[in-house]
Image (cartoon, rainbow, N blue to C red; front, top):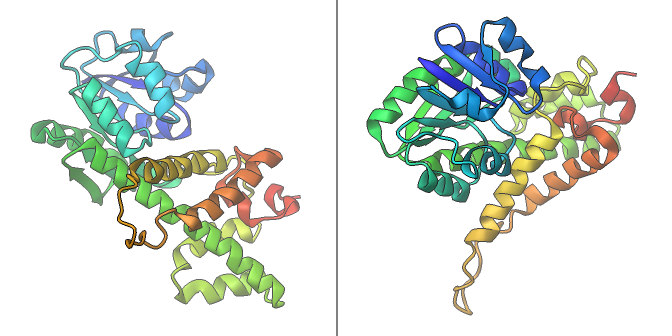
Length: 298
């Protein structure tokens, strides 16, 4: 298949590398140097997004967020009529509705996981469109990205977007929980290693295992798998989604659902934003767990 792949950042590159083996791939990225790995793997490189899309049978986008999608795809009406558009960008449910209204062939395909799972065909992948035939076609196409048990077809891009935001909400809040567990451990004279071990039988076991190598100093956060800036961007999408769906029509005696303002997520976002302000936005989001020397391996 002739595929245009727009957006070859860290995740986009890993996804596209799976496809270049079996398809005629043309890639584009705003920063042209980031297409080098794919060019070396056999992909053609286009100078513009429009040139990449010209003649393509399917278009895939892997962009930083919904505003980048609007600028690159929606504003210039980039997708030719009838050509499927597979968007792996993390967007809000409202964004997904907007994009589907603008491009009837829109398929929301957000991926759940970081670079390691992407390289090892172990991502969670949602494939969202009401067109059952198109959904099946795209699920077959993106199967090389996914853990087969986590390749999930849903009936709208909106629903796919919700699945991705829920996954990243759990990740952000559990990382904040680990941050606070380490602080509690330190305050009680418990070493970081002991704290990680004690968390093994708790609800924080997953994040403690995932981020343990950073806490132990076995990895630095520089060049990490999932940056603080990226997960902070996703957290803002979640908060905006909740704010945007509040209709203010509750009766005087009705009480809002506990946590409806996402207080735990606000706490996680505050930690991430502090790291971004300190110049660590492009570090792995494990940066919220570490002191400066631990973060850089000094």
